Length: 364
Image 1 (cartoon, rainbow, N blue to C red):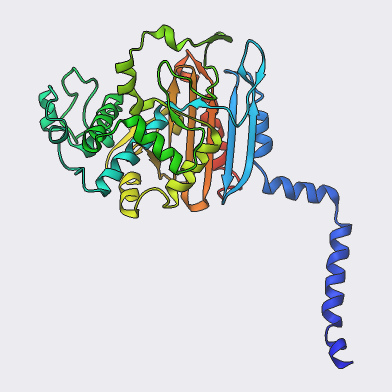
Image 2: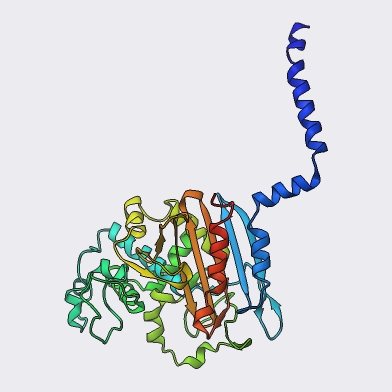
């Protein structure tokens, strides 16, 4: 009997707490919930705005493996009004660069590539004399000075920043030379190993599963992008794939980000090479400041915002941004199948979504 009396105070306390919860003001409960989720209403409102342009795409936000926000808004095909979905495939354009960086770092891990070596070591027949001075490292972090394969360098390698698709095309060639395999084969095999079943390299003349239409927009008029009418050759496109030729969807990119940033793809030393930097450059989707450029990734580590790591991509009727907040295990992916001809607003929604998320309860 004495043992029963010992538990009476605890039982009474639990009863009082239960009564207080039941009798709490519903408005107070709703307000508390809004304070916890202070980002969803703002995102919902944002993507319904029509100025300076309209949003057409998908948003996926996850934290610790849990979906915090997901939205598909607009059309996959405008003519027949097919609704867009999170399962749809997009051109991720320059977000492809981090895949190329990973493939190259894997060969560094295999002992086949030395980051300090020059292009000439791996591409001995390359015609430009600057192949004797530009290193693999400088190709990766945009400090090579390469603006085009057939033109002189803009500056002495390693002394400045210049974003370069051509540099990543050369990285693709180096990967192929040391492995004896095509870039397409290596990338597609990597995606399969990561269970990214909707991700692959786009190939001209082949069925590209799940890829939705891309649109160019001018004065609120949407024009379907005809890839085949652009005069892109097979050879030219294969060279471009390492810089921007990969197809994926939000769910697969979430797999990529989660595994990349939690040590499931690269060894720790390789990953640190990827996310550290000694070169900086500005990009509209990440603000007006110069931020770090690692290997296929931009690193934003300026206060008061939380450090985040990511990239953006645009072109051929598509625009995107994705970034990861290491301290909060937070991943944000935004994919659009529209590209505005007014380049000042191409990343309008990507920038605004980034601001909302980085100033929300998700990171505080």
